[in-house]
Image (tube, rainbow, N blue to C red):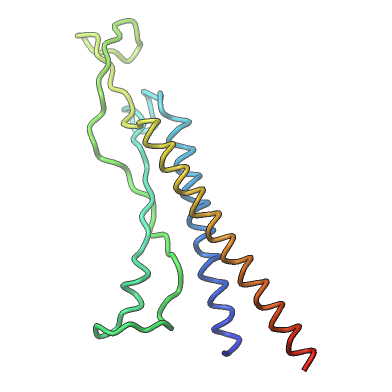
Length: 147
């Protein structure tokens, strides 16, 4: 196995670590703004979500699987969740309309917590894979030194 292919293996896990870390940051920002009724854009805070590229599709060429095409996870960007804002009756709120309704952010804390746990577990899995790869490489080098 060439050195480039060995490095590619660790780069795949490293890209997963970076992507999941960024995903956790976006989720933390959503949680922090769960009650923000005034954002820079003027309305309530709009939930953000990560967009990842499809790494498996990148590995397909002419309908055949090419393992050398695997390069890990790529973050396409962050996009706003365009679901409707829930309205809450709170006539004393400074952002209430004439009927006393306040548009709240479209952030649902239980969903955010599930997403956070999923991202955390994916981060741990990538870290474990990277650690296992390192151990296997060290054992291989030790065997080669002994030969």
